[in-house]
Image (tube, rainbow, N blue to C red; front, side, top):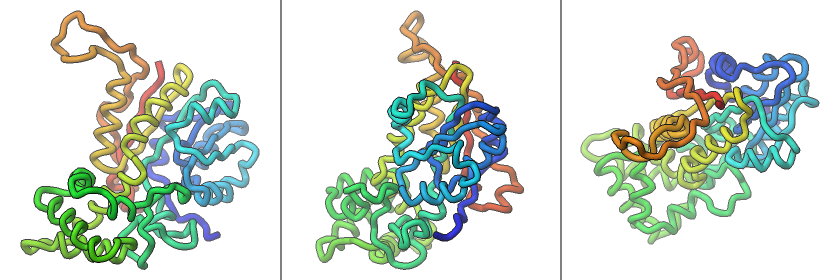
Length: 315
């Protein structure tokens, strides 16, 4: 297996807000190549512990290799981070001191290094099966959505990331083309997008990634998983424990802020409703304005440009 090339985003800020300490247990909800976990272990003394989750068994193997020197301090589990409470129960752990959720797709998954071939996460590179699943055993693939959803459902799917006329043009093109032959590879999907998005003198290359993003979000149920995952992570933290969330596009940014604001407690219903019921506060939101990566980090790792860091502390 090739050495991982994915670079962890905002590692210094993750450490600053997670505040790892010796003798404490932390969860890396999306361990990927293990970069963030390595940094956390380096700052948690000789006996800090990491529980690393990932839906991709190949990513877990990459992390296992990268964290080999900390083997006795690392527990790897093939599971989605929104099921952290069940994972901790199975491990007979009641609460943890911190949890990280990194919503970014791994560069290894984009390049297909972790499975010997790609799963269709990206439109550049070689022609690949249109799967886009983080869990390779997941039965529903991206191609299934393209070939089986109604035109109305496809419009809702692509409406998350495409704009105006783009949505209708893309969905009509997909429906038309799948009548001729099922859409099963990145090459064919990209050609459909290139033709549909190249209207009125526009450069389709600029908008193709947005269509891929919409399909990836849908097949992995990413937004609902993020909402459930933040809520589950907060419940898994002990008082004073911290949650750090890294988001990478506007849908994730907004959902993370909204969910953490809700967990801060306060009135249920309109703000002007005097004397109405209130939610109990579960967290203190530490970053009402999410943190951006530094200019030097973006210069060294352009993939970090869109990252935003959100942090909260259990109360």
